[in-house]
Length: 164
Image (cartoon, rainbow, N blue to C red; front, side, top):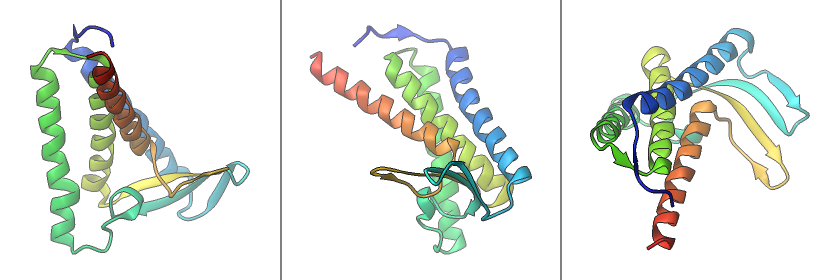
């Protein structure tokens, strides 16, 4: 694994804001141009876009919870966790690159979905994959950012262990 370097706050902010802006732009276009629940085939039935508003978490988990509990678990706690991660990244300047990238992608995606919850009361999802062994629920670019971030975090742990 590469040596730890010092990354500027600008690098972290650009990664977070880049993920957030791409996510919000894609959701804006979906809300403007796609009729809710209509299916638009992008690559046959393998990649479709379908505009849905998700009041739950990832893949609608928790959508049926009472409103107060849902607000605390899906909005307040994630917001506090994302703030803590941002403070951590800005405070500790000497972090591995994969850790910085991974955390920045998780924060950018998390903020994208939180923005939707605050603004619209639900998260706009629109991507569905059905290809060979991959069949997903409906998700969005914020979810993709979070997954890429988690993969970077896992790789960071893996490289840290094998280089000991």
